[in-house]
Length: 621
Image (cartoon, rainbow, N blue to C red):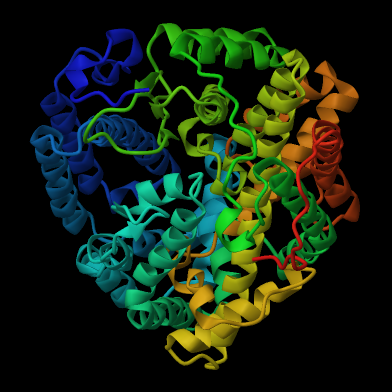
């Protein structure tokens, strides 16, 4: 499917309706309203603590400001993302940021004022009028043990706008400043290499092109390996020092404190994912067999793992994708499906790929006060785009039910729970597609998608989290030198347990140790792994219990928002992350899909007359 040269060439029905965010008013109207409310908050920043009535009034005023901020943020960011070169939203962003910087200077440190009045708040917190705010107030009071002096907190608040952004430095080093050499194919033709062309080359039918693409891409990534290793260790060290100064047990304790995730939960995750190494080896053993039978060439795991054994020719229009996803999600009930229909009819989704549009896909955050839970896509007509629509609608429907059933203070569900609804939707989509398909090859391909998704979202994210966990522990103990070889060895030694037959250590093959963006942004990828497992658990429960479970899912999970801690929300759904039974059910769907994939593969290739190749036993990457 083509990329449009400009946004005005896209059909109106394939664009989102961003203007409804402003409700018929101008951007300047909402910016003025935001500034006006913020100034009111500044006027009462101290006096609001004089009585519980004044405090409640201050909270209500802050809620009004937050709704306006949601509108401004989403209007600016989404308008920017449909044309990254458009100066208009950039100018809007500058106005909004400048206003915030000045107003925050006047407002000062709210946390200091809060703790100055902590004794009053401890008396007020159980008042019924503060019921909606109780969790937030108790969490803030609980954080007092980790608070620094008022002067230091005030200083940190004032200098926050001038702090170096290591994420931006990382992006410059790994994007703008990387030099990619051309890649030669088997006919000695040169191909331009970049992150987008790289993924296409890995699926090429040219074996030499695939190999050279991997080698040249790795060579490019290795250019800044020492700078990145130093920056990664320094990033972890900054967090480690902060954790010690704020009197947390260690870095991991500080980074998981808000979600109340224990080391026991993390270690249980790592242990159980590592236990899948026989199943993963089984997959690659059969993939190798099918690959060699189909392509009649030796399988090389480093260079051929991304090649599709079958290319299913199905192409989907936007309307076909919408209908498939709608039908696949019908089991969730009338309100769910009616809201999806509303999303289609009222233009929540910006579908098409356009020059200068942000790549990828997302469902917006900060949605309270915005009726449309917008989705950005780059629809290409492939099965992946159908999956993406189902996935992003999972996020949007989570936001819809969460906003509908909670006040603004408790509406925004935590990142810990964010991927569950979207992955559950993917499972429902694939269940529908498999049921409707009569082609063994098509079913084989769908199961391949499911297994690849499980590897990418659960296995890989758990491995990365395990590496981060070990690196934080070593940084806390001052046991890591800031050089590439040191962190590469930690990466390799941590990940060895996830492979039945690990490859020998080669430091150039461990470049992921310093080039994964998530590593520079805190500690959270374990949440993706848990999210996939919970989604699998939910899907398994749906297959066992049907509508009864889906009703519970909407009422107890999608509608829960942030009114309780994520582990308690999961417990209300029968999920205990310390339980072996949870992992058994979380893995059940993966095992079923793996067995069905092997069964179909054996049937498809049973009559193959492909010549056998003499190959060495495979080792996993």
